Image (cartoon, rainbow, N blue to C red; front, side, top):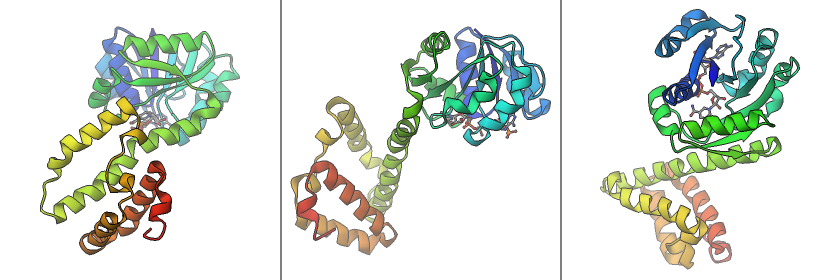
Length: 270
Ligand SMILES: NC(=O)c1ccc[n+]([C@@H]2O[C@H](COP(=O)([O-])OP(=O)(O)OC[C@H]3O[C@@H](n4cnc5c(N)ncnc54)[C@H](OP(=O)(O)O)[C@@H]3O)[C@@H](O)[C@H]2O)c1
């Protein structure tokens, strides 16, 4: 495929590296200025362009700007993108409607969201192999995006545009909530004089169980057992050692009791 990338940031450059390695042709990289596009473009021997320059006749334009800039970029690209076959943004949360100005000039539009964290281009590109990709598009763009995902070692799946907010909430719950819990855990381990690294085998086993047996089915511990006295002891220790986390710890306990179906037993304590 001949591909143009608009927005040479973390996601755009990571995807371009992975696509380039899979044998696709990165034809041009568009940035806010030529200067800003130049570094990323040089990696691929691609043209460094500025939004407003003509978009070459390519199979796909990847719009990889921040979610809240997608609408403005679509307006800016619309007069010059007519020779491209398709254009997608990379946001998991944003509707394809944000690309309406591009659809209005006859270019097929969609969304292509890698369900992966891409902290920088190199690490991101390495993680895209094996990642799942949410595809929101009608045929034939849909098939092209499935092919692109598969070509870089990913797993494409179709996502309805109306389901994007719920899907993105699920992605945030998967990626962010465990880190919030682990931050609380790390501070409590430190207070107890235990290295955080000691929890690694436990945490890795929990994640593995969640995908093998289901998250709720993998729950063990005092909340699942309905052991109120033990949980009361934990809460008192949190209040003593890390009072800044007491409210958050209570919220995690409530959520865990909901999952375990033991809310009634903990009503008085929590
Ligand atoms: N990073 C991730 O983990 C990840 C994962 C999945 C999906 N995504 C999606 O990927 C998209 C990009 O996110 P990101 O994390 O890659 O953001 P980012 O690192 O901030 O990159 C955004 C890029 O867009 C450029 N840009 C902004 N406004 C522009 C404009 N008017 N014209 C041309 N270029 C412009 C920025 O250039 P300047 O430096 O000049 O501002 C920057 O190079 C978002 O929709 C996000 O939801 C990200």
